Length: 73
Image (cartoon, rainbow, N blue to C red; front, side):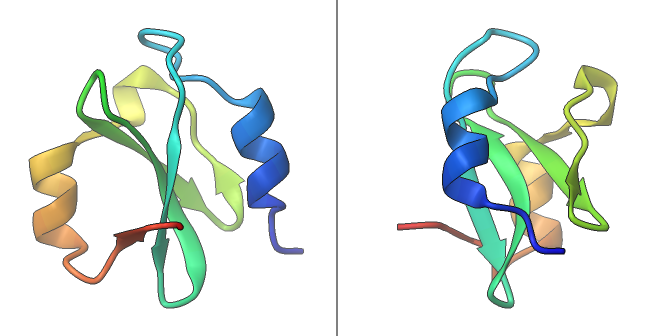
């Protein structure tokens, strides 16, 4: 079942700084949630956001691995 992105963005926060997140889409699906303050992306695996600091990827590495991922508007 696909995740409801709008609902998740209302309740999720960055576990590192408690700041807001932005959804990153790839191939019409949410691929991760980005924190602008920490410059990290929390991946979505099998429709489940992995909100663990140790699983986050720094934004430059994420961008290199997912060049087609875009912020959801």
